[in-house]
Figure 1 (tube, rainbow, N blue to C red):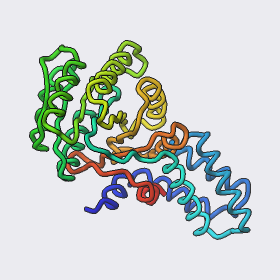
Figure 2 (spheres, one colour):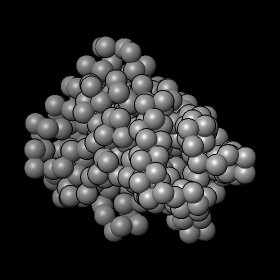
Figure 3 (tube, rainbow, N blue to C red):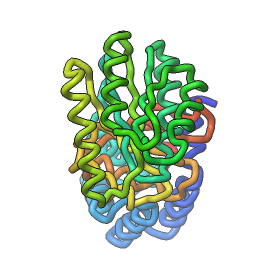
Figure 4 (cartoon, one colour):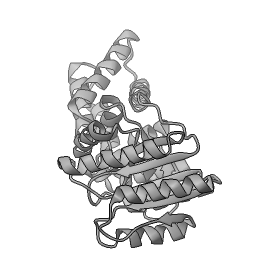
Length: 298
């Protein structure tokens, strides 16, 4: 299946709800205040935040009125264009090698699995990869990451369970520097986004990378479960305040009927989505594409 096919298929549940409601709306309403109010409600029902939905509708309304348009296709295309612009307000970072990517997030979002898939992505790009098992708290986290590292055929650096995560990162970075490795992917323990001490631990790991390998590009990606909807936005806001996020990886996109929160993430928080998980297999992770996401959404 093509990249477009995977994203479109993953968004099937969301698109079915939005498209059906749009068809009903166009069938019963001419363009006017009532039409735009209902269009806003459709977006909110798909988990676009109220603030972002209001902005989108205002832009659609202004453009449609300015062009004296009453055509359904024009309004639909206009909505798609504006949705795409929202997603592109936050530019996706361009990878520069060597690069260290630290993955953060709450428990249960699929961080370890995501790292295995991202490792596989870089291997396919002909890059050398090392993964660092800095989740030293969750039982068997290192073993789980080892399985994914073997599947992707990449090196892994890990310590005993309960050891200092920053020490794992130090060893991984030192090893990567010596071997001239292109990519280091860092797994971290899942944490409640309200726990201050755990956030400080992330900041400590952040400092280790910055100090030990200043010439490497250092990115921090938040892994989000797409099925959590608007809760994902509040998670992103807290993690961004703690470590200044550079991007987001969405998991379980194929399991959600409310993918609209992604527009709020990019527009309100100015954090881009970099990768999207669209299934369970190691190849089921694709670079995010705004145009294709919108085509799958509406």
